[in-house]
Image 1: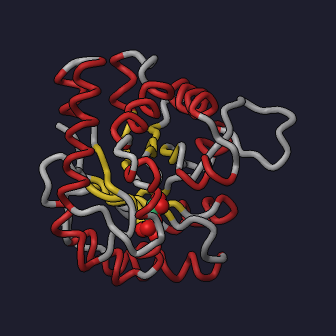
Image 2: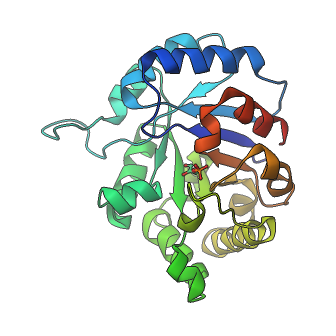
Length: 249
Ligand code: 13P
Protein backbone atom coordinates (compact mmCIF):
# COMPACT_ATOMS: atom_id res chain seq x y z
CA UNK A 1 0.00 0.00 0.00
CA UNK A 2 1.20 3.49 -0.71
CA UNK A 3 2.12 5.70 2.21
CA UNK A 4 0.82 9.12 3.14
CA UNK A 5 3.57 11.70 3.26
CA UNK A 6 3.82 15.33 4.35
CA UNK A 7 7.18 16.85 3.42
CA UNK A 8 8.37 20.38 4.09
CA UNK A 9 10.67 21.84 1.45
CA UNK A 10 12.36 24.71 3.23
CA UNK A 11 14.12 25.91 0.05
CA UNK A 12 16.78 28.60 0.72
CA UNK A 13 15.39 29.60 4.11
CA UNK A 14 16.46 29.30 7.78
CA UNK A 15 19.97 29.68 9.15
CA UNK A 16 21.37 27.23 11.69
CA UNK A 17 19.79 28.77 14.78
CA UNK A 18 16.45 29.12 13.01
CA UNK A 19 16.67 25.51 11.80
CA UNK A 20 17.27 24.26 15.33
CA UNK A 21 14.48 26.32 16.74
CA UNK A 22 11.94 25.23 14.10
CA UNK A 23 12.91 21.58 14.56
CA UNK A 24 12.60 21.84 18.34
CA UNK A 25 9.14 23.34 18.00
CA UNK A 26 8.09 20.81 15.36
CA UNK A 27 9.26 17.85 17.44
CA UNK A 28 7.39 19.15 20.46
CA UNK A 29 4.18 19.71 18.53
CA UNK A 30 4.29 16.72 16.18
CA UNK A 31 0.87 15.09 16.27
CA UNK A 32 0.22 11.36 16.23
CA UNK A 33 -0.05 10.50 12.58
CA UNK A 34 0.16 7.54 10.28
CA UNK A 35 1.77 9.78 7.66
CA UNK A 36 5.50 9.97 7.09
CA UNK A 37 6.72 13.45 8.01
CA UNK A 38 9.82 14.86 6.34
CA UNK A 39 11.73 18.13 6.35
CA UNK A 40 14.24 19.35 3.78
CA UNK A 41 16.49 22.06 5.24
CA UNK A 42 19.28 23.59 3.19
CA UNK A 43 22.43 21.46 2.67
CA UNK A 44 24.54 23.32 5.16
CA UNK A 45 22.16 22.50 8.00
CA UNK A 46 21.34 18.90 7.07
CA UNK A 47 23.85 17.32 9.42
CA UNK A 48 22.64 19.34 12.37
CA UNK A 49 19.03 18.54 11.47
CA UNK A 50 19.79 14.81 11.38
CA UNK A 51 21.45 15.07 14.80
CA UNK A 52 18.60 17.12 16.16
CA UNK A 53 15.96 14.64 15.01
CA UNK A 54 17.86 11.47 15.96
CA UNK A 55 15.10 10.21 18.23
CA UNK A 56 12.24 11.77 16.29
CA UNK A 57 9.91 10.24 13.70
CA UNK A 58 10.60 13.17 11.38
CA UNK A 59 12.89 12.25 8.47
CA UNK A 60 15.48 14.71 7.20
CA UNK A 61 15.68 14.77 3.41
CA UNK A 62 17.72 16.74 0.85
CA UNK A 63 16.45 19.29 -1.65
CA UNK A 64 18.75 18.18 -4.48
CA UNK A 65 21.91 16.26 -5.29
CA UNK A 66 24.31 15.73 -8.19
CA UNK A 67 24.19 12.66 -10.42
CA UNK A 68 27.93 12.00 -10.41
CA UNK A 69 29.59 9.78 -7.81
CA UNK A 70 32.24 12.36 -6.96
CA UNK A 71 34.79 14.51 -8.73
CA UNK A 72 35.28 17.96 -10.18
CA UNK A 73 31.81 19.43 -9.72
CA UNK A 74 32.45 22.57 -7.71
CA UNK A 75 29.61 23.43 -5.37
CA UNK A 76 27.81 20.12 -5.73
CA UNK A 77 26.79 17.38 -3.27
CA UNK A 78 26.81 13.64 -4.00
CA UNK A 79 24.51 10.81 -2.98
CA UNK A 80 27.27 9.24 -0.88
CA UNK A 81 27.76 12.50 1.02
CA UNK A 82 24.08 12.57 1.88
CA UNK A 83 23.99 8.91 2.88
CA UNK A 84 27.11 9.41 4.95
CA UNK A 85 25.28 11.86 7.22
CA UNK A 86 22.11 9.79 7.35
CA UNK A 87 20.00 11.37 4.59
CA UNK A 88 18.30 8.69 2.50
CA UNK A 89 15.67 10.61 0.57
CA UNK A 90 16.17 13.40 -1.96
CA UNK A 91 13.89 15.78 -3.82
CA UNK A 92 14.67 15.64 -7.54
CA UNK A 93 13.44 17.89 -10.32
CA UNK A 94 11.82 20.68 -8.35
CA UNK A 95 10.51 23.28 -10.81
CA UNK A 96 12.91 25.85 -9.32
CA UNK A 97 15.83 23.54 -10.21
CA UNK A 98 14.41 23.14 -13.70
CA UNK A 99 13.76 26.86 -14.20
CA UNK A 100 16.77 28.52 -12.54
CA UNK A 101 19.48 25.85 -12.76
CA UNK A 102 18.86 24.39 -16.19
CA UNK A 103 17.91 20.91 -15.01
CA UNK A 104 16.52 19.06 -18.00
CA UNK A 105 14.59 15.80 -18.07
CA UNK A 106 17.82 14.09 -19.18
CA UNK A 107 19.73 15.41 -16.15
CA UNK A 108 16.88 14.43 -13.85
CA UNK A 109 16.79 10.92 -15.30
CA UNK A 110 20.47 10.59 -14.37
CA UNK A 111 19.85 11.89 -10.85
CA UNK A 112 17.04 9.41 -10.28
CA UNK A 113 19.23 6.57 -11.56
CA UNK A 114 22.05 7.61 -9.22
CA UNK A 115 19.66 7.75 -6.26
CA UNK A 116 18.37 4.28 -7.13
CA UNK A 117 21.86 2.89 -7.49
CA UNK A 118 22.44 3.99 -3.89
CA UNK A 119 19.04 2.71 -2.69
CA UNK A 120 17.95 6.26 -1.94
CA UNK A 121 14.35 7.30 -2.25
CA UNK A 122 13.55 10.09 -4.72
CA UNK A 123 10.71 12.54 -4.45
CA UNK A 124 10.39 13.36 -8.13
CA UNK A 125 8.68 16.68 -8.90
CA UNK A 126 6.87 17.53 -12.10
CA UNK A 127 4.17 19.93 -13.21
CA UNK A 128 3.06 22.25 -15.95
CA UNK A 129 3.48 26.01 -16.31
CA UNK A 130 0.58 28.43 -16.55
CA UNK A 131 0.86 28.69 -20.35
CA UNK A 132 0.56 24.91 -20.63
CA UNK A 133 -2.62 24.88 -18.62
CA UNK A 134 -4.04 27.81 -20.60
CA UNK A 135 -3.21 25.99 -23.84
CA UNK A 136 -4.76 22.83 -22.42
CA UNK A 137 -1.50 20.91 -22.89
CA UNK A 138 -0.90 20.21 -19.20
CA UNK A 139 -1.54 16.48 -19.47
CA UNK A 140 0.89 16.16 -22.39
CA UNK A 141 3.55 18.18 -20.59
CA UNK A 142 3.29 16.07 -17.45
CA UNK A 143 3.25 12.82 -19.39
CA UNK A 144 6.43 13.86 -21.20
CA UNK A 145 8.20 14.85 -17.98
CA UNK A 146 7.41 11.47 -16.44
CA UNK A 147 8.27 9.49 -19.56
CA UNK A 148 11.59 11.25 -20.13
CA UNK A 149 12.85 10.95 -16.57
CA UNK A 150 11.22 7.82 -15.18
CA UNK A 151 9.83 5.42 -17.71
CA UNK A 152 13.12 3.68 -18.39
CA UNK A 153 13.18 2.49 -14.78
CA UNK A 154 12.64 -1.17 -13.93
CA UNK A 155 9.41 -2.17 -12.25
CA UNK A 156 11.32 -2.85 -8.99
CA UNK A 157 12.73 0.67 -8.92
CA UNK A 158 9.30 2.17 -8.32
CA UNK A 159 9.27 1.20 -4.65
CA UNK A 160 11.88 3.96 -4.20
CA UNK A 161 9.96 6.63 -6.12
CA UNK A 162 7.56 9.18 -4.67
CA UNK A 163 5.93 11.61 -7.08
CA UNK A 164 5.08 15.23 -6.39
CA UNK A 165 2.76 17.10 -8.71
CA UNK A 166 3.64 20.77 -8.42
CA UNK A 167 1.92 22.97 -11.01
CA UNK A 168 4.39 25.82 -11.45
CA UNK A 169 1.62 28.44 -11.43
CA UNK A 170 0.62 27.38 -7.92
CA UNK A 171 4.08 27.50 -6.30
CA UNK A 172 4.57 30.37 -3.89
CA UNK A 173 1.81 32.31 -5.62
CA UNK A 174 -0.99 31.78 -3.13
CA UNK A 175 -2.87 30.26 -6.04
CA UNK A 176 -3.68 26.59 -5.44
CA UNK A 177 -4.84 24.00 -7.89
CA UNK A 178 -8.39 23.21 -6.87
CA UNK A 179 -8.78 19.83 -5.16
CA UNK A 180 -10.52 18.70 -8.35
CA UNK A 181 -7.65 19.85 -10.56
CA UNK A 182 -5.17 18.04 -8.30
CA UNK A 183 -7.26 14.88 -8.27
CA UNK A 184 -7.69 14.98 -12.04
CA UNK A 185 -3.93 15.21 -12.63
CA UNK A 186 -3.04 12.61 -9.98
CA UNK A 187 -5.54 10.17 -11.49
CA UNK A 188 -4.07 10.86 -14.94
CA UNK A 189 -0.56 10.18 -13.63
CA UNK A 190 -1.66 6.91 -12.05
CA UNK A 191 -3.33 5.86 -15.30
CA UNK A 192 -0.22 6.76 -17.30
CA UNK A 193 1.96 4.67 -14.97
CA UNK A 194 -0.49 1.77 -15.14
CA UNK A 195 -0.26 1.86 -18.94
CA UNK A 196 3.54 2.08 -18.96
CA UNK A 197 3.99 -0.54 -16.21
CA UNK A 198 1.04 -2.16 -14.45
CA UNK A 199 -1.86 -1.48 -12.05
CA UNK A 200 0.10 -2.58 -9.00
CA UNK A 201 2.89 -0.08 -9.49
CA UNK A 202 0.39 2.66 -10.23
CA UNK A 203 -1.62 1.87 -7.11
CA UNK A 204 1.43 1.72 -4.86
CA UNK A 205 3.21 4.93 -5.80
CA UNK A 206 2.55 7.87 -3.48
CA UNK A 207 1.64 11.04 -5.36
CA UNK A 208 1.96 14.25 -3.36
CA UNK A 209 0.50 17.61 -4.30
CA UNK A 210 2.57 20.79 -3.90
CA UNK A 211 1.70 24.42 -4.53
CA UNK A 212 0.40 26.86 -1.91
CA UNK A 213 -0.85 24.16 0.46
CA UNK A 214 -1.92 25.90 3.67
CA UNK A 215 -3.75 24.83 6.83
CA UNK A 216 -6.93 26.30 5.32
CA UNK A 217 -6.92 24.19 2.14
CA UNK A 218 -4.96 21.07 3.12
CA UNK A 219 -7.88 18.96 4.31
CA UNK A 220 -9.86 19.33 1.12
CA UNK A 221 -6.86 18.62 -1.11
CA UNK A 222 -5.80 15.59 0.97
CA UNK A 223 -9.35 14.22 0.91
CA UNK A 224 -9.03 13.40 -2.78
CA UNK A 225 -8.49 9.67 -3.42
CA UNK A 226 -5.34 9.98 -5.53
CA UNK A 227 -3.67 12.65 -3.39
CA UNK A 228 -1.37 10.93 -0.90
CA UNK A 229 -0.02 13.98 0.88
CA UNK A 230 1.79 17.21 0.22
CA UNK A 231 5.11 18.83 -0.56
CA UNK A 232 4.87 22.05 1.38
CA UNK A 233 6.93 25.19 0.79
CA UNK A 234 6.07 28.43 2.58
CA UNK A 235 3.73 26.89 5.15
CA UNK A 236 6.45 24.44 6.24
CA UNK A 237 8.49 27.35 7.63
CA UNK A 238 6.16 27.90 10.59
CA UNK A 239 5.71 25.00 13.01
CA UNK A 240 2.04 25.67 13.72
CA UNK A 241 1.12 25.77 10.03
CA UNK A 242 3.10 22.64 9.20
CA UNK A 243 1.60 20.80 12.16
CA UNK A 244 -1.90 21.86 11.11
CA UNK A 245 -1.20 20.49 7.61
CA UNK A 246 0.02 17.18 9.09
CA UNK A 247 -3.17 17.00 11.13
CA UNK A 248 -5.20 17.51 7.96
CA UNK A 249 -4.03 14.26 6.43
P1 13P B 1 4.65 26.73 -1.71
O1 13P B 1 3.94 25.81 -0.74
O2 13P B 1 5.38 27.84 -1.04
O3 13P B 1 3.76 27.14 -2.81
O4 13P B 1 5.81 25.83 -2.40
C1 13P B 1 5.51 24.58 -2.87
C2 13P B 1 6.77 23.91 -3.24
O5 13P B 1 7.44 24.33 -4.17
C3 13P B 1 7.20 22.76 -2.45
O6 13P B 1 8.27 22.10 -3.03
